[in-house]
Image (cartoon, rainbow, N blue to C red; front, side, top):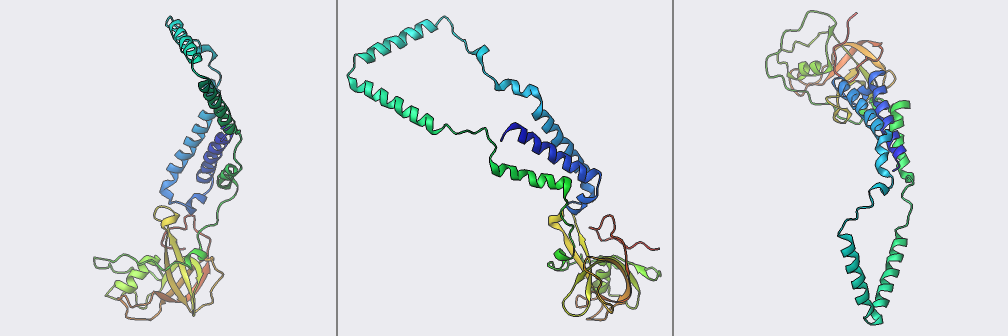
Length: 288
């Protein structure tokens, strides 16, 4: 690939990373917030490499070597004399050797012609490398949402080894989807029974009755994302991907405090809210 194409790819990739990580929050669609400094450092490094590649001084070694071609020394006359002697000795042989030399020469000529392709042009397929780089500057891939969540099973939450702390008396009780799932399926005290809880997430469609209040959690990057879901009954489903806060009580199903209990609520109120700045974590809803 030509130098200008290499330089262009490095510079555009660096600018794209800096634009995404410094001036927008779109990087949160791919990695967790803690990796922002690494993205910024990577962008600066790519721009630095592009500038170094474009530096005119790096091209000085690509010219001719006329200033260093004459390396003759005192021993060269002896070498030329020996070559002449070998040439004369070859001349006393039969003509077959001469023909062979001519054929070899012809073969070399044909071989040289076979490698006479122009490698200075950039292959057409190489230009496709610019597409993902340009997308960082002008187009951000869509965020993970209901399309992804509807095709992923709900994450199995971690088992609470210690006893659960008493629930605060606040009503409605702000709670994460993870904690609600743990309380429903692991809390033997059944403290969640009859309590009005408040959870925030986006809407995902469900087969049969109800719909899902959903969160997608990114641990490191989008490739390791996991899905949390709580089924919502008693209200019409808002449009998919709409962010809402749901107030409701546990929907009876199975034995509360065991793995047979259904992770679901009977909704009392559903309120549309703005998408949080970092949507890829299971956060407690903000209380007004």
